[in-house]
Amino acid sequence: MKRILHLDMDAFFASVEQADNPELRGRPVIVGGRERGVVSACSYEARKFGVHSAMPTAEARRRCPHGVFVPGRMRRYQEVSQRIMAILDNFSPLVERASIDEAYLDITGMESLCGSSPRLATALKQAIRDGTGLACSIGIAPVKFLAKIASDYNKPDGLFILEPEQIGKFLQTLPIEKIPGVGQRSLEQLRALNITYAADVQRYSKKFWIARCGKWGEALYERGHGRGSDVVETCHEAKSESAENTFERDTADRDLLRRWLLLNAERVSGNLRRSGVEGRTVTLKIKFTDFQQVTRSKTFATPTNSTKRIFQTAAELLEMLDLKKDVRLIGVGVSKLEKTSHQLSLLEEELDEKQTKLDAAMDGIRARFGGDSLVRGRLFDFTGRTRERP
Image (cartoon, rainbow, N blue to C red; front, side, top):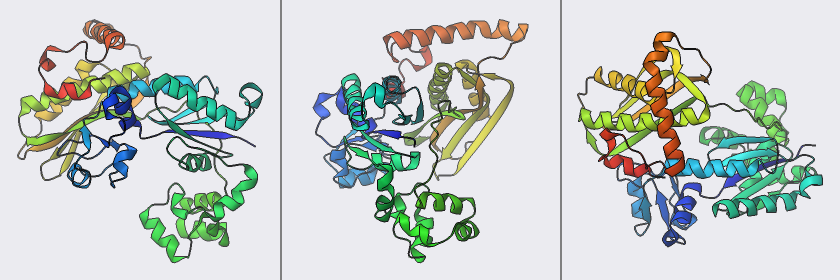
């Protein structure tokens, strides 16, 4: 039987801020605390006051007025995440990156190399602490969804191992809402059937669940019996890359909007190049002061990860919009991604050669000296740039 390890970094964004700034350790840190935005993450000290991610900043300030509100630094979080993923590669050849702060490892048969599962998990936790100064929680189980649930036990800095013979008893006391995919609406339907714990699903047949809930019903039936995928997918490819920001004050200043587009285009294109991919579709996202949202897209015949081309395309899409209302959010996305391997025509090569060299040179300098070491002239005095310093 497989042994799947799920690793989840504890309060990742907030923990990075505390690790980088010792003065924040032990204090309620709230990331993404701009007045008009929402909370991106918060430390466990802030969670004691009822603060949680996706909460409006105003509500977070009301609940935790003494909290330390800091802007997010996505470049820094990505840098630390890459360091963590590199550490995981030393513990298993099969690693699936599930998000910026969590991953699955197939550790089946690793006992001969790394010792027992508790020993391996303890060594992994220590390696991450030594390499990043951060704590993580680990769950180990025969299948992925149970490993993910297990990693949430004993947080923070937790370790929970679910052996195959313990699954039946574990499901009898596992709240049904802990099953991945059970949201508020489905929870109400399950409660109407007196389904309180995961094992309660077993009272009904697979045919019953499929008839009632379709494909989701079949998945629920399997999970209610402790069954699920045990395949760690090592080649998970992103479908899109995007960056956006919510303004502290709504604006219709097109020059300001274009500068934000350039900054976001830099972030998106840089991530694409680091991942070795390009995209065919550039999308502009706008949210107005009344929360109405519009998107405009343009698709190319050949893919790109050029900062200039992504920015110019997004700027052109912006120019075609009639801004009758102020804007509260602007973003840029690139989708229809593929590996960087297409052949350019002679004309395209001539036009793109200088830009490609410029992007590569800037990427190299930033990788060596930090993301804020080289700044385009249009963004030199732009305050938005400082919110993303690594």
